[in-house]
Image (cartoon, rainbow, N blue to C red):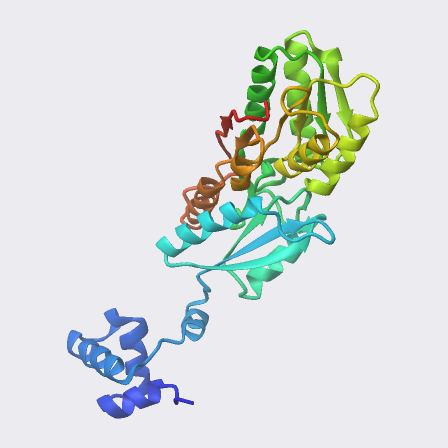
Length: 337
């Protein structure tokens, strides 16, 4: 194994003491240009690599963003999060920051637990992805400075956290208007998991829009589940058992929609001739199903980038009170409707 080049090795080769070599590498403004150039030259010749962890320890920073991504029991992190993570990683790289990912089961997250991550030097800031419940720290008053924590996908501004998400209601209004324009007058909504904020927001958006259009009594609700295809299949079986079936089905996620559509097609019904189906999220593969799925695309890449930019603004003091950043989704009509 090749021996790691150390500061002592650089000191021996340059004739300088270790503290001077260290300053030349970590605080070049504290040494002369001649000393800096000498140390950099020898470091390059010997193949010296900076010990980033030790450097950050001395500075009292980690240059690291901790991403806490929720999931349901027995499920991997949702595919919808991959776009978020890509945006986070790209923006973090541009700012010279590192990213650490940790999964947790969908449950209340305590501010005290997250603060311990920060105090222990695990990370300088935290992104909470799809956190349903946030338990504020009891020992923090309203006059204390904002924590470097940002919520993604859920609005936790009332709990004291700046939040970045999609304008979900707008996406579902677009779906309803599209289906009504296509002549549909009887609808079903395939629900997400009970207690989910997304489930509540999305169902209410559909219900309220139909009520505005005079069709509020033409909506039924089918039990789905944790945004997966298996739950969509279960909802489709309930749909097939109905004596009078709606002609249009709006799902709480793409996963639910694909499971629903697979089961409907397997029963011999046609999509969209017998029943139109729409999803939400905009997963890449929805464009390649047969038929291709009508859906609402969330700007996940941009959400990830903006979340990192917001963290930077909190660190720099440009954001001092919680704010909501809601980005517009994109409605895409495909063959399933």
